Image (cartoon, rainbow, N blue to C red; front, top):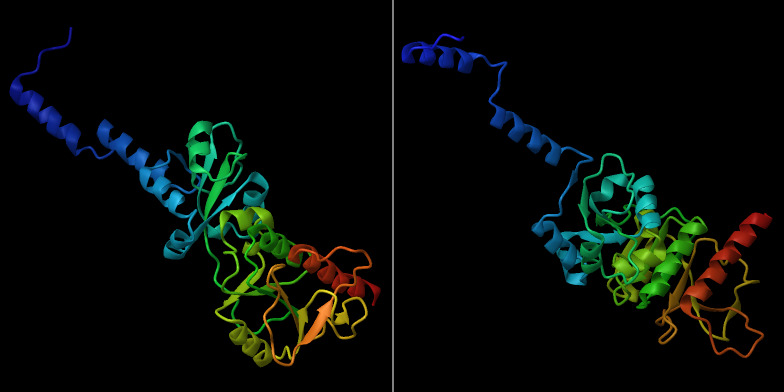
Length: 293
């Protein structure tokens, strides 16, 4: 049977134990460990109200501009972003039934139902990333020609063109204000996150953009038109230190002094092509010519 300690002996033993730094208090040990887990890269945590509120604001253009962030949704888009520019990812949100292999990233786990209420996508895949908007390219462009989009307001068309520009090897795309926001969730889905790989330069007006083109040495400027202009399949020098300006199907490209009209021959009786289809045809004409050299 253990001897009973007198009060004075008990106080001395307690003081001795408290002076031993190798025996931390249990409550302190758990508290510190919890903080380490929550702050460590690659941690899995709950979605806080602050982060949830932030995500909802990023579905608006004002919110994206205010915070300098955007939403990338879908497994393929998030995976491509992670492989190309992982440093842009602030944190990720996944439904609890989705496998997420993104080493080193802060992942918030929520239920499938909670995810559906958070996302703007109808058929959500259960994964999204909150991403920093990349800075526009610095210095002079290096591409042989510049693709310019003037007030292309449809998110699907803009995203498709960005994805196609990346596919043909362009490193930049220029666009004017009045176009869809290239960092909206709809454009990112359509582009499969290609806007985080290809550089995007925005200009307030077509006049400002044109001046920048000529200053960078892209003096030959083509403006696409329906049924009128040079044939995109036979025009010499079309992709040599040039710019090809495309506008929306409804309004077309704005007028540019000294520009040359460019058209896609259409033997059929269709009135026009949408801008994403037209851009794809012209961009892959560049690939065809480059491959035949």
